[in-house]
Length: 387
Image (cartoon, rainbow, N blue to C red; front, side, top):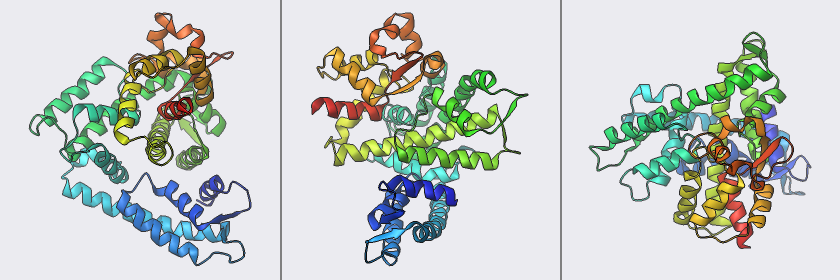
C-alpha cells in the first residue's frame, strides 16, 4: 500500500520536493477514491481529509511531507472502504438489485449509481441511446452484431414496463451482462497474443513490462500520470494475488478488463470535468460529440480517416493535413499487427482496411505502429483546432 500511495503522491508532486499542499493532498485522495463513491459521499470525506491535512502543514512551506500525508491517506482510505461497503449495501437493498447481478462487483455499485445519475438527465431512467452511450464511454459496447442483439433484447425486456427506460436495478443487470460479453471478447483478443508473446505451459512469470506490452497492444494506454499510477496499483494488486508470481491467460484477461474499466472511467471523469472547467463545453454538447465519435467505432479508437468522418458529421471544417497532425499529437501508437483484433467490428479498422481506407496516409503510420485517438484525445484536439 505504501508503494501505491507514493505513486499517487508523486503524480501530484511535480517539483519532486517530497511535499504537497493541502489542495494537492486533496487531489491525491480524489484520484484514489473518486471513481468509487458518489459525489456527496466523496465531498464529505474530502472535506474531512482536508481539515486533517491542514493540521499537519509546515508553516514555513505551507506543505505536507510524504510521511505525514501517507499516514493521513492510509487512515482516510480505511474510511473510504467502509463508506463504499455501506453505500453499496444500501443501494443493493433500496434498489432491490438481485445478488446475481452484483456478483463480486459490490464495490462498483456506488460508482455505477453516480454514472447512472449523470446520464439520467430528466430523472425518468435511461433510454436505449443513453445506455449505449454509457457503455461506449466505458469501453463495453459489443463488437459483434449477435452480442449487440442480445443486449438489445435485454433492454427491450427490461424497459417494456417502464416507458421504454431502464431504472437503476435494470441498468446494473444490463451492465453486468455487457461486461461479461466484453470479458469474453477480451479473452479472445488476448489469448493469441498471450500465447505468442508469453506462453509457457499456460502460465507465465508475472513481468509488469510484458503485461504492459499486452495491455498496450489492446489499446489500454495511460494518458497521464494519474492513469499510470492507477495501472501500477492494479498491476501490483494482480501480482500480489497471483500464485507464486505466475499468471494464466484468464488472470491476464481479468486484469485487462479491470484496467480498461478503471482507465475508461477515469478518462470519462476527466473529460466531463475539463469540458466544464477548461473548455466551457456544455454537457449536452459533449454528449453529442461522444455519440458521434463512438458511433464511428464500437471500441472508441479511431484513425484519422474515421476522425475526418466524425468531423464532417459534426459540421466542423478542418484541413486533412491539419487533422492528421492533430491525431499524431493527441493520439497514441499501438503495434499495427495488433489492430485487427483491437479495433475490429463496429466500423473499426478491419472494415476500414478491407475498403482501402485504413491504409491511407491518414492513419499516420510510423514503422510498425499506427496512431489512434480516443474520445479524451478527440475533445482535446477539438479545443486545439478551435484555438
